[in-house]
Length: 184
Image (cartoon, rainbow, N blue to C red; front, top):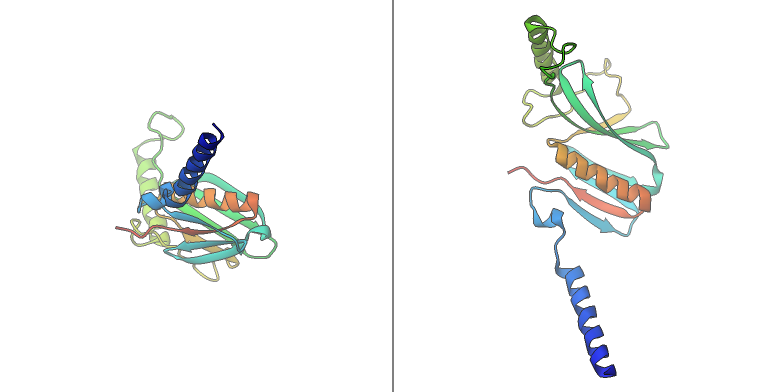
């Protein structure tokens, strides 16, 4: 009986180790999702299409994610890192804002919608000539973001993955390498 229990224990242990070393994470299984790899160096290393950002996990003072409407023409989901420095780091996703047609306050008439459409086109031109591949555009010295590092993320689910990776590093102090997937 003791030999049987020992054999079963060893079998379960080997299956557990094999599952931990060979089973891909969801991010690794889907090439369209970001990779999020744990490291031992205490650094969060973001490898994005717009550049790279590395921060020591224990240097992050606060982490936030919020959503807002910008100039009535774009819906923005933004992730901010607060560090003990003058530098601000922002990652954001943006898409055209479509007012709820059932709301009387947002549906002020055709003229207002046409004005919003014109504002959207102006704002889109400032952000990127091609919203399919958004880019951060800064206009110095007019820009108020002189000490801001900004990254534009193409898909909201990718931004959510980035936030999740940052949150895990912030909570645990454990380093990670987060890689944005390359476009098809």
